[in-house]
Image (cartoon, rainbow, N blue to C red; front, side, top):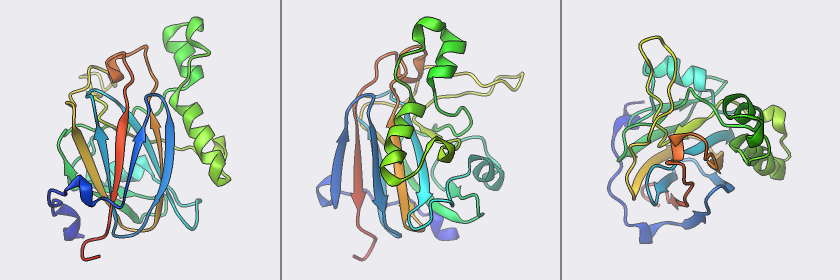
Length: 217
């Protein structure tokens, strides 16, 4: 497991196997093979990127926020964090992080939570849970398969009372996080459409996803 704590070399984006530009508020999904790396780039800064991982050949095994927090003994995701599945296996390791603050406790926004937090006039605004439902349905999954997710670039400090706060993001234009897959995984992203709290600076913006070959390939 010590290899999970070795930072990735600085990669030339031109060497990526694939590059995907994800518009503001949109979902995306793709397969990342074992040993390959996925880089998520916050192009304009302060953009939350809600993300889930599923084992590519058995979707019943998927990311577990609870087990990830327990194994790390830390509240946030950053370089060296091992993403743990509900089967207790390592799905991916964070190998590079230029931002330093990623949440895995606050979950995804939904039409229901928007209504409770911000009023009935927000009920029909698009939300991450709806993005996730749309995207996982392409792979034969349903709303029942959506579990607590990672919020890359989302700033969620823990207050003295133990409550979670959602405040202005600290990511800058071009900040990125990179993960090396430790098994074949399906990555599902919601480029967060939230406009009622500061997780996106009240202005959802595009992101970029790059997939790199395994070292040595």
